[in-house]
Image 1: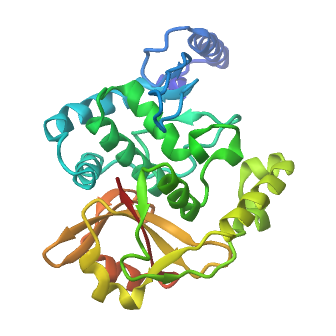
Image 2: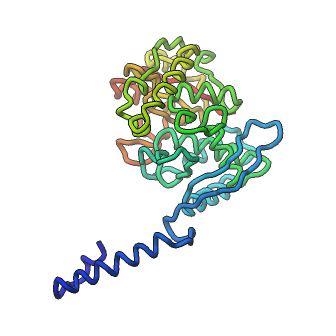
Image 3: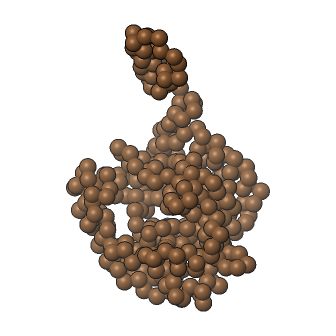
Length: 318
């Protein structure tokens, strides 16, 4: 607390300081100035989607001015490369975010809203933001508004935000739905992958692990229905033991889900692939490193070092 920095001469003086600080805090919280550092911004207007396109409308988004500043800097840096292949742009965007702090649960709030946080990232939001920015740069209207639409389309089932269950929580479902929207291709099978035969039900069987499901148990049944639909899809992955022989088919900017033997889950981590002379490396928001990194080890070494990892499921940006 700020008052702790000053020498207190008496208990009465300490109480006065606390009262003054409380009044200042109330004034600050009541202020309508959303441009102050750290103040959240709500974009309340509706941004119309392009006619006939898959991009979602954005009714509201929450972000800080710092997020928009990061986006503007990234857009300036990437604009000269807007004709690069989409995978190359994904990697360029990812490199600009290296060193950003890792932070879990940045999307969670009282109500499900499009949250933009380019300051702190987890593995999925890192990949989502890189893809959304790459698509924005290549688009006809490279702007922050366009970025909001791209991000919403990527993050939510069919690009429609209708509460917590509409978010694509399972990355295997994320790949499938974004393939249906034409944002990525499900290429694990084409690369020589094999069927992934698992029953996906981790969320409905562990509702205590999710704040929203604990607060509103009625959502569990909705999630269970989504899991049933996921389990009707054919899923493919490249097993760890096949990776070295098949990694020649992987491309710069491929987004890979690290598959796992954890019961009820298909994917436990999300990375962006970066080919190098000594093999495929990965850019990702690492909880172990506490930040976004470009790995020193190859993808194959990474899989070998993680006991619960079994291979990769690949989404290729389009």
